Structures are given as structure tokens and as C-alpha cells.
Amino acid sequence: MITSPRILDRALGTIAGDHDTWRALEAALEAFTRALRAAPVDEGDEAAATRSYVRLLAEAGLLRWVVPGAFGGAAPTLLSTPICLIRQWLARESGALDTAFVMQGLGSNPVTMAGGEALRRALLPRVAAGAAICAFALTEPEAGSDIKNMRSLATTCDGGVRLRGEKCFISNAGVADSYVVFAREADSPPERPRFGAFWLPGDARGLTVKPTKVIAPHPIGSLCFDDVFVPTQHRIGAQADGLKIALANLEVFRVTVGAAALG
Image (cartoon, rainbow, N blue to C red; front, side, top):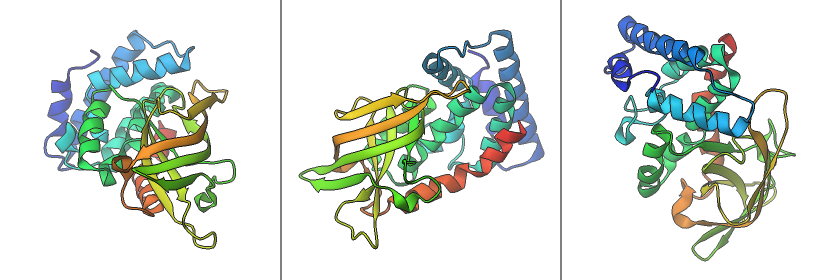
């Protein structure tokens, strides 16, 4: 263990945002990164490095900042300010380390916001404990900045939906145990498309992954959905809530990109 969760607990308090709280969190981060420099993770194998970083972040208590208190988190709700502070410190050490941290939040917060109670209780404590690695599958070959161009389809069937389509540039592709996927509702009109959000495990039948090589040590790739079945209880939010959920999730985490860049 790199730093005791009890050390971090003293930094959490009631999250009043006071100077002492942030000083204590910074002290915990300084201890974490100092120990990491003394025993660095080999980033040659991107998948193995991601798993190691997620484990170390969990042992240090840092992943508690990306889930709500009811499921083992540090605060009642997710807060961008401590996530910014953590990303600044982690990115100073390693881009791969920072990515491992933020993807746990980006890939699980849609479940926090709109997932069913059973799904939240099954997934979120595992995220905080580093027992589940998360991914957020939004981008497609024809839908980057303009996500309304998504072509992946969710077709209603008995007991849920079936997903068909492709995603690209998905961080943690092939490493993740947990994917949040966004797709166009097949029964929506082309002129007014509606989108849904869905959770599926990394070993879902019909899901295949093609790794993408990039310069940085970053596990990233494309996902292909070939008639992947998603049961009703794994839909996130109501039908057609997907775009709202995706944008609300990005609202929490996009601001933290600047903190990572500063780091």
C-alpha cells in the first residue's frame, strides 16, 4: 500500500472546501507520488500498467473521490475540485497514471447518475476498490465532437436491447471490465434521433476490441458491437436519456482536463 487510507481520510473531512482540507489532500498526494517514484510502474505493457495503477490508486484511497459516499466514496457526491487537484498531481508523474484515475470516474459516473440501484450497488463499490476497470464509449468514426452523428444502434427486443455498431478511440478498450455505451435508439426518426445509455461487462458476447497504437503508453482502441444483448436492468436512465447523461458526465470531468494539463 502506497499511503494509508487513514491518511487520506483526514483529508476528506466533511468536504467543506476549507484551506486545511486541501492542504491535507495535497499532503496525501505528495506521499503517494513520492512512494510511486521510489517504486515506479513499468509502462511497457499498457494493460498491465493500467491494472497496476488502478490497484495502487485504490489502495491509496484516491478512487474514493470518483464514487459517491453511499457506495464507499469520499464525499456525498462527486466534486470537480478535488478531482482537479488529484489529476494535477498524478499527471505531473505520468499521463498513464492520470488516465487510469480519471477513467474510473468518467466510466462509472453515468451509472452513479442514472443507473438502477442494483447496478450501482454491484458496480460502484468495486470501482472505488479498484476491482473493476471502467471505460466510457461515446466517440465513433463519424461522431467525434458532434456526438449527434452517432450511428451505433440500440434495437428493442424481448428483455432489453441489442447493440450494433462501432466506437473508436475508447480509452481502456480491451482492459475494462465495465463499459458505458451510448447508441441511437433504432425506433427514433432520422430527423430527430434519440439516444440511449447502456452498461455492459467487458466479456459481453458479441463485443470485440481492436487495439489502436498511439505514441503515449495509453490503452485505447475500437469497439465493435455485433448484436450485443443488454438486459433492461442495464439500461442507464430512461429511453432517450443518453445524450443528456453523456453531456452531464462530461460537465463534471471536462473541467479537470485543464488541471491534468497543468500537471
